[in-house]
Length: 53
Image 1 (tube, rainbow, N blue to C red):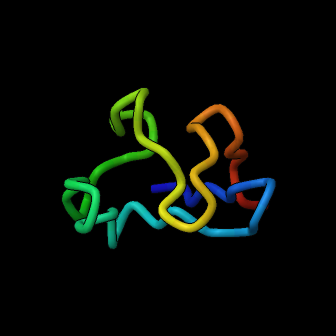
Image 2 (image 1 turned 135 degrees about the vertical axis):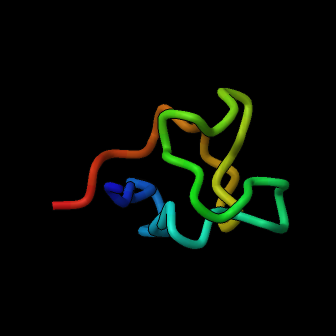
Image 3 (image 1 turned 90 degrees about the vertical axis):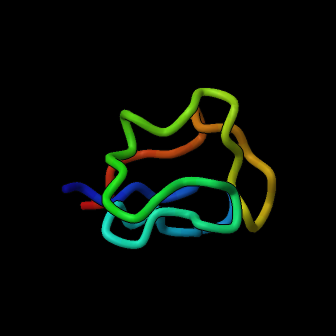
């Protein structure tokens, strides 16, 4: 699964890890993360993430 990077702060969403503190289980693809989820570091919306190259 592809990792996604928060453009404002550089946080990397790794599907293998998820975001357990925000209720996103490990193994959750970025496309399956809730639309109202925000970056756990800077609070940017999901629309501010881009695929990692």
